[in-house]
Length: 393
Ligand SMILES: Nc1ncnc2c1ncn2[C@@H]1O[C@H](COP(=O)(O)OP(=O)(O)O)[C@@H](O)[C@H]1O
Ligand SMILES: [Mg+2]
Image 1: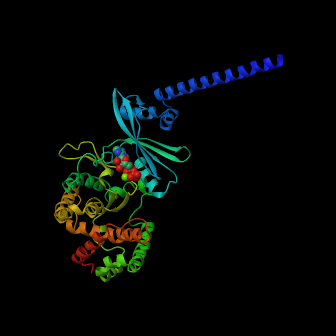
Image 2: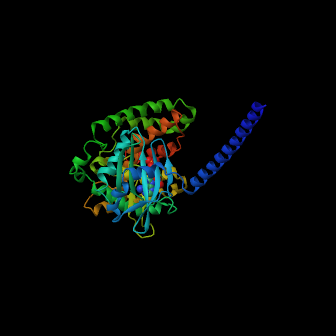
Image 3: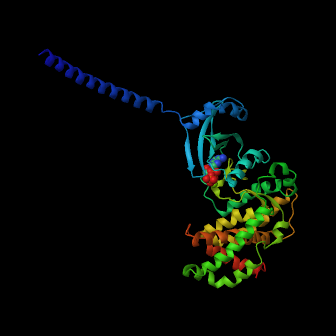
């Protein structure tokens, strides 16, 4: 009997204990959830910020102690290459947005170029690049974290039209003038071992390789019915033109080389004073930077825009006639003159870039099923018209 009753007490005790345990578990879970909502755990960025005493290193830039606002972080973009965060700090009762660009491994050449631009060149051209507050290496093993000034991108601030080129060209000319020919070579110690130079052995070899491959792609493209239809009318002339490559216009080299940006889309250009008559543009996203003919950036700014924007195409010639001389006039403010007519230099830069790079890219994308080749027809048309005008064929 005792045994039975005893066993009943045990059973009851066990079940009560179970219920109590369950209730406690609920209560604890509830408590945790409430605490989580009120005080979510700190993001890795906040933890690293504390661990590495980042605030101390920001102080000098803001003239006071700074605090990272842990609850105000926005991921703007994430790719396999990098993650871009918009953070917020407080300093002297004001808040400031800050960009954190996290470079993920592997550190391929383009990333090293961009990192070196931030680390070594931003102080040389401070009004043309975001201020760099702090660079941290070896984070989470192999990442590099760059904290920099937030410069509101032009995209998102205006509805961009070709009139806005006039606002960007003065800053672009300033970038080129300040790093033009001897200004670059005088800072050789800064640039020597990492910046791709248009006339270096390695970049020249790459150009030769691409050139050979473009000719091969062109023949391969003629075997595809869809591409053949687009290419056939200009095929013979294009073949003749390509035989003269890969350098088509020595005038471009003679017109001078500068640090060029190479990817001048509106998300990659920032401006703090967009409401003012003249803009102070700062250039973002420097992975394509190199020391190359300065006129190439005019193609990157204007030529690429019109290639994508068919809707503006009827304005293209007028814009070139206005903007190429404007660029030359801006360069003249720094004492730089060109022997060749600016509109001609623009068209040469366009054709050189298309023939040595864009044509190859478009054919590669299409033939190797990477992505569609939307710009091919536009480029072929320019080769036909301007190639004739500039006596390439
Ligand atoms: N310093 C900055 N200030 C403001 N916005 C920035 C800054 N850096 C990057 N961004 C924004 O984040 C986007 C992506 O950054 P970006 O450096 O261009 O990376 P990606 O190499 O992936 O294009 C930019 O297009 C821009 O809108
Ligand atoms: Mg970008």
